Length: 153
Image 1 (cartoon, rainbow, N blue to C red):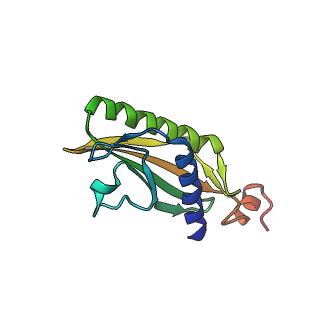
Image 2: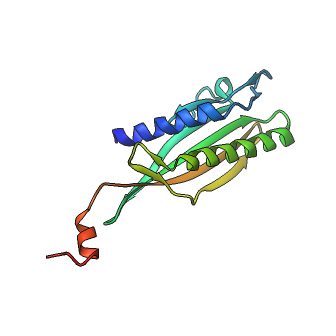
Image 3: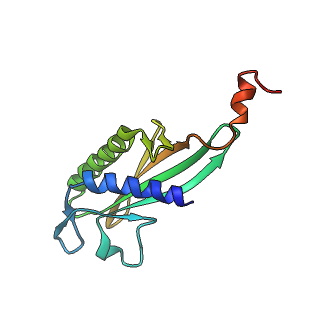
């Protein structure tokens, strides 16, 4: 699990470096989103927004690979619906582009190009969620390779 946390940290660095778009807080002052590893803390949401959370939400082990799903959530305060909507899409585009640009992380995690995103809004907040799938290379069953090549004894 430590390596998955390290992957989340790498994603956090990329997002912090590239998301410089300011949006308003609930008090009205502009702020660049704070990035969290883990869910965005809801107990003090009005102090945190705008915010981005990075969560390794699930995974699967198959005979060929280990897969990890990571969700990046963006939460913005709605002070001007059209403006926040546009900023949210800008952030989604930047996050997808920059995460896929690197391709392989920590010499072990390969970002798959099939990403999925969703937009949701309720009374005060607009949220976007991006789902990435990472394949963990160089791990798990190497004996399958020999079997596929016909070298199984």
